[in-house]
Structure formats: structure tokens, C-alpha cells
Length: 75
Image (cartoon, rainbow, N blue to C red):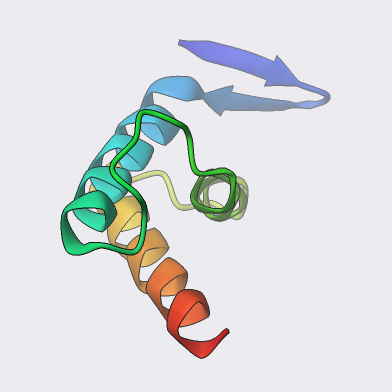
């Protein structure tokens, strides 16, 4: 499904799938609590990467996990 955001078109399915993969991993390993609430920080990381041109959901999820963990353990 495509959603228009301003002048950009976002493939919600890619972003949603990448978020599901990344959040599942992060919930299982501990950085995100095991709840059904959306983690806004993780979603923002994924959306930013998508807007910069990363369109592969697996690569997007893996890069988002790495960035999320790096920011979590440094902060």
C-alpha cells in the first residue's frame, strides 16, 4: 500500500514489515519491553532510513536494529 506524505510516497508495507522484524528481535533480546505498544524511536529510525532510499525490508530492519542498539548502549 502506498501512502502519500507531502510530495513523497511511502510504501507502508516495507516500513511495517521492517518494523515488525526489528521490534520482534529487540523485544526478544531485551532493549524494548515486551508490550504491544509501538516504539516511536525505532519507528523513526526506520522511516528516516526508508526516506533516505533503503527499500529492502530485511536490510532496513538490520540497519535499524544496529542503530537502535548503538544509541541505546551509548546513551
